[in-house]
Structures are given as structure tokens and as C-alpha cells.
View 1 (cartoon, rainbow, N blue to C red):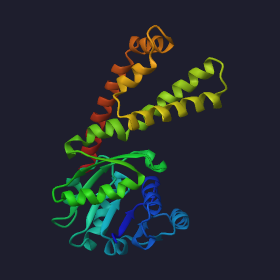
View 2: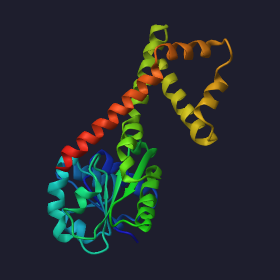
View 3: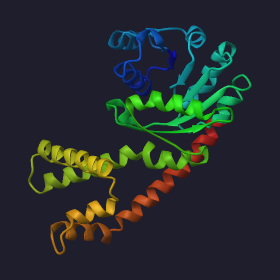
View 4: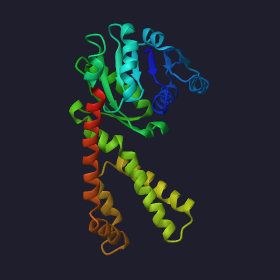
Length: 269
């Protein structure tokens, strides 16, 4: 049995803990750390998993999932470094922090895997993208994939691509919420009750996403299947093109990538 410690039980840490419990991971093989006593009590009651202090959690675990804010990571690593033994795998959910940040603060040879998750982890539909550090092997990546599969899909990329991943899927849910907000507002403008307009936008997004993932068809193919020549959808798509929406999305994602690079550098210093 792999013993896993969640170091930090905020939203993402608890979301992963939820997925692990639901996937059948024995509670005796799980533990978590949390600064807030009240938050720790709530998490322990919800999941039947023990809260431990950092040194004890590190000593009893094979996999350490670092799920704290990036600006808190250095202090946490200083606390756990003396307890990290040979063969321990460190998994980072800290957005923007490179594996090298962890490797230089941990004992020589510690395997580190970097993860860029996203907030749909909270409902078991995450897109998590992982990258190996200097000493992480394919076996470590397989191990992390198995853990993260409990809360969604997993892909692997070289670490050099993680800032692009952040821009597309890490921040991506916000783009869809932005579109859903715009669609619902438009529905209200056209006379629909707001609850109905919001439901129409949300369910349409859910259905469209499932068609993308389950059919495997290119988005253009699926869009064209809805777009009859001279029809209502064709007029709407033309209007989006007239306002250069696709170019705006591309520009936004590029800016997001650039900001991810900038923040990563500032946190890593």
C-alpha cells in the first residue's frame, strides 16, 4: 500500500483527498497536514483521514503532495527536509514553481514531479498535466498518474511546456465561465429568466465538452455539424469572427503564459 500525505488541505488538497478516498485508497494509508485547527477538524470529519504534524506525516509516507500556496512552499520544504528519506516522491501542486525549486531545498536525489491541475478537480473532472524533475523516472510518473486519475484526466509534458499548460488548462476554466456568463447575460437581454439562461449555458457547455472528449472529433468538425449554411448559427459565428474573438482568445492565452513565466521566476527566487 502506497502511503500518501497531503501537505496542505485547502481546496485543491482536499479535492485530491476526496478523489483518493472515493477511489478506494485505504484511510490508514492517507494523512494530511493543515495549519488551521478548525479546517483540519472539518476535513478529518468529512473524510475519516488523520491530520498529522508535518514531520510525522513525512516520516510515515511514501508520496508527499505539496498543496500549499507557492509563497508558503519554501518554509514548508525547510520543515520537511530533515525528515525526507530515500525513495520518497514529492509531488508539487504549487502553480508556477519549477521542480528545481524543490530539488535544491530537498536532499540530493529526491524525485520531484510537477503538476498543473485545475479547479474542476473539485468535482472529479480535473485536467492535470505532469512533468518529471531531474531524478523522477517513468515509474514515478506512472505513480503520480495513478493518484491523479482519481480526480480526472492526466497528461504528460516536458517541464518547459508547463507555462503553456497553465495558460490553456490551468486558467482555462475561467475562460469558459466568462463565456457562460456572457451567454447567460445575452439570454436575459433576450427575455429569458436568469436561472433558465444560466442553466442553458451550463448544460450546453457540459454537453459540448462531452462531445469533444467522447467523439474525438476536431472542434471544427463538431462546430460545422451545428452550422447550417445561411442558418442561425452561421450568422452567430460570423459575428464572432467579425469581432475577432478567436484572435482575442489567442492573445489572452499568450498573455497568461507570459504571466505564468513571470510569476514562476519571482516565486522561485
